Image (cartoon, rainbow, N blue to C red; front, side):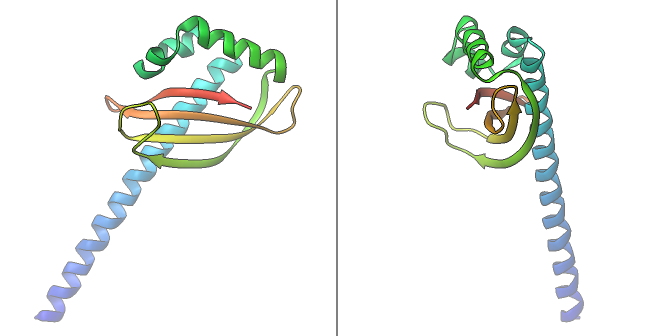
Amino acid sequence: MKKRTIVILISIYLLVFVAIGHSSDLLSTDAVTAAKRFARMIDSGHSSAAYSQASPLLRLTQSEQEFVAAIEQTHLLLGPVQQRQLTALRSIGIYPRLPDGDYLIVQFEARTLYKSKAAEVILLRHQDDAWLVVDYSIR
């Protein structure tokens, strides 16, 4: 009887563990998809649309003019992104100068017109059942 109880408890534990891991993977996939969608808007010259769809936190830290000007300056220096590949994904709860929350740093290695290797970093925050961009940079 004890063996059976132990086997059942272990089975339940494994099922819960796998379910939690799978849920986490889905959230990460959703975040990467949101980051890529945001980056493609910028690639296609729709920086204002990207800004308006970003997290309210982005709009609190930068005006639309500042955001668009920074993107335009980067495009002049590096050229538009021609290719990107996901290189890192990091979950954090605390980020400097922002409220605590569920953040994800998505990093791509990007190739631009004038730079063979650039780091494109997108910070997202999970809010209202969606991943929204809080910060974007490419160097």
